[in-house]
Amino acid sequence: MSFVKDPSLAAQGRLNLEIAEKRMGALLTVRERFAKEKPFAGLTIGMALHVTKETGILVRTLKAGGAKVSITGCNPLSTQDDIAAALAEEDTLVWAYKGETKEDYYRFLTAVIETEPDITIDDGCDLVTEIHQKHPHMLGKLLGGCEETTTGIIRLKSMERDGALKIPMIAVNDNKTKHLMDNYYGTGQSTFDGILRSTNLLIAGKTVVILGYGSCGKGVAMRARGLGAQVIVTEVDQFAALQAAMDGHRVMRMEDAASIGDLFITVTGNLHVIRVEHMEQMKDGVVLANSGHFDCELDLEALEKKSKRKRRVRHYLDEYLLPSGRVLYVAGEGRLVNLASAEGHPSEVMSLSFCGQALACEYLVKNKGKLKPTVITLPAEIDDYIAGLQLKAMEIAIDELTPEQKKYLASWQEGT
Image (cartoon, rainbow, N blue to C red; front, side, top):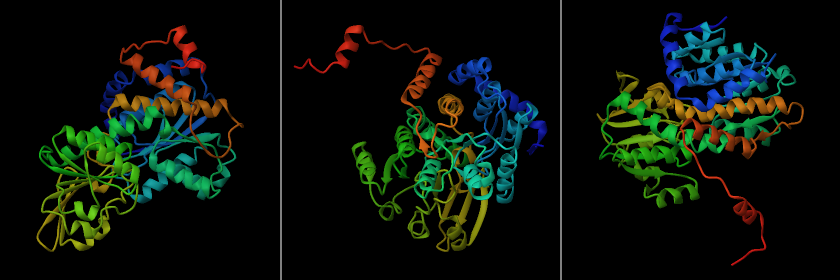
């Protein structure tokens, strides 16, 4: 039995799913083939993803391929309640609502696990972690799983290193059509969508401090600069810091940036990268936001202890009054601001990511019994196929190599 906040929202959910489908042509092409070939006939796919309109189109794609699907959210604030209601009406098992308690969050993960999935799809690795730690009897049944995020891949590689990983896991995030598209273009745009919905802040002329310069940080920095901001990057990785400097951003330590920034955005995937000692140096009225997967990047527990008052002043915008009389604003409760305060990535970019998820599930089925319990990257030709689907959806044609060019590239004898 599904659990959604308000079944009466299903009509609006169907409209949003309709709009998303129009913008996800690449994934619809995969769905058409799945509908004919039924690669998941007799299988159950259990998902812990952001329950958004784009995820809804992935659910429909997997079901077209013959799968039974059960789904819950992967973040307490990322579910779109109208989409959850619409999917529940479509005979999908859904346990999700925006604003889940921690208890419900883990109860819903357990509900998905109890559907006994053959394949898992994860965003952040919580579903697979729960199976390994609390439901090890399931491991023998699972063909494997797919992971969506950088954070989840980090966790999976730690499991593999410790000898704890017992099933093959496909690192969908490692697809170029995922981390160089979704993380870069998607996170960059949707992060500012969330911040602007919460704050209505003018970005032009502001100093934006971005913590982390991976694919997500690069995308956020690009959008910040495009909106007219001065960008400061903080990093712990020497090459990433060098890239940021070469891209024209100021690079410095967080302790030096704390007193300069007007808007701070964390995208590190790590713990407490903005701490109280940084907050105490910040200017009055500074906005803090996080676009990393978990809500641990801002040390909000310490901020609450330090503050004289906390109050909700706008849509998912909390004001903290410090003993000095200064206030700091936190958008999206320190969770993924693009989903807590907005709608997540646009449909077009998620079409690429979810092509990766759908084809990763098919890869697990085709290679049943052949894959080791490691973190696996999909073959390059699948990634290239996804890029081709998106080009076709965008009505873009590219050149082909001539026979002479192919021969030249395959040879080594011809020199200067």
